[in-house]
Length: 353
Ligand SMILES: *Cc1c(COP(=O)(O)O)cnc(C)c1O
Image (cartoon, rainbow, N blue to C red; front, side, top):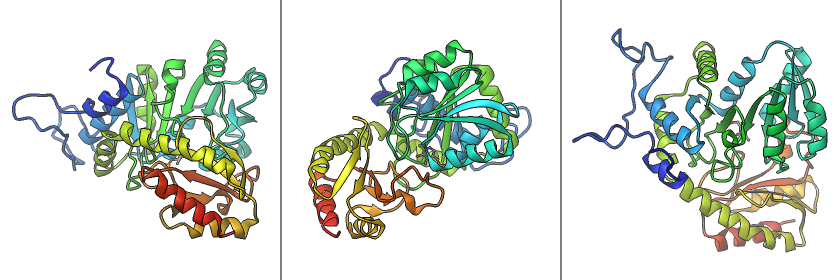
């Protein structure tokens, strides 16, 4: 299975050994307790359904091993739990609202010394890296869709012997593989594109270094942030079609961008040139922007992203969202519906202002 392309690995990885009569899929293992002396000591230490999912994500991310967590935030928390008290770290000043809120809290508590920088400004990032111990990189950012010069920044951080973790949720391994660029950890909110059906919350961390794997495994075991076996099974089922779904959604997004750019009711469209998330601002007030989101019939007005179904929302409806995000910014997660139906729905909704 070495060196398979992502499209093949998504289908072949994490299967039981191919022996006569063997099932193609790992069963959902509902067990807390195992007879002593075997590979799994207890239900919080390991689970066959997790392990199959983990093997599949490892193949997608070109890693050595993966740990699944109960959510993306649980995976992120496990990474931060490894950092020593007061460690100076560099992070984007814009990014997923949950990661940002957690970093700000740790910073205020003195738990970490976080240097927030504009991740798209490589010169500023390089300056912030001086004397830092760790780099938390999210690119493209959520919801501003800023893009970092990933390879250059990771290279500089590694030259300085820093640890590097990348939130790869938006780009997905089809567009970017952080471990190949030298990062230590590639993190996913599996909830989004990998699982892809808006029916499961799950996270993952993929690494190459066995010692780092052991430390993260210890963090998962002791913090208890373990996934449910059924969720792991659902996510793996989702991964089988991840490349197909993601490419269809990305193609739809690329087709929508020029149409949206020409629309007189919106401005400041951001799209990094890849992926299936588009952010734009409505030329109206908060109420007008809300009306747009509420007027769609195909697209669901909802948070979260990365499902087969298109969703959008006014991001600032959340108290946690950064004030640097405009009040009338809509984040659109383009799904796999027919492009003409999506466009008809957007056009009708935009006429609501
Ligand atoms: C959703 C999301 C997270 C958090 O993941 P959960 O599974 O919701 O805990 C982290 N990073 C990004 C970029 C996300 O979109």
